[in-house]
Image: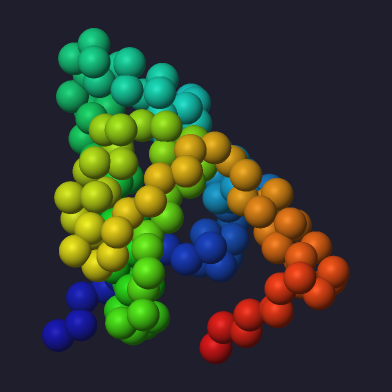
Length: 141
């Protein structure tokens, strides 16, 4: 017997009359840590944990667990040629979260940590190198 899914899709929620702009805000910008804590700062959440907030620790651990799952999923389809796992963004400023992730994924490849939100800059610089002929574009299939 197939059990019904407890998860509703975006389209299901719209069909039930949920406001599309509300849903869009929940998906981009107001989800994740903001939905639970009103902030997207991992450092602010860690202060709550250090003050004894067990729920904050549970939620942050769950986030690290989900990130680890996605790394594992990607590793399974990328194959054996994984040189490194790179953690970036604001979350990489948190040794606590980085260690939780490393505990789960370091067997796949070395974990490199580059704190900061420079992803768009890195993409732009990579494109510029290709345009200048300094680097060949990589095609991932």
